[in-house]
Amino acid sequence: MIQNRVAETGADLLVLGAYSHSWLRQLLFGGVTRTVLRTAQVAAFLSR
Image (tube, rainbow, N blue to C red):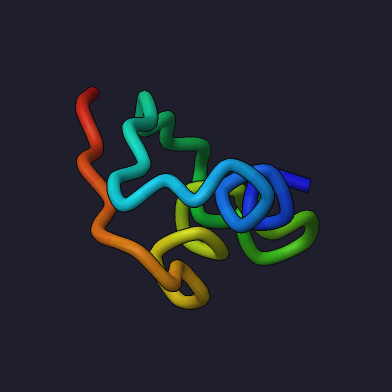
């Protein structure tokens, strides 16, 4: 959904708040932060 919105608006920078969970929760459910970093088509600025 985030990537679709970036494409629709023609944005060239994505700004996100990075949030971390325990390694087990990340393993079981994944995470938005990691997914965005792997698949971003534009520059991504993350803050924690």
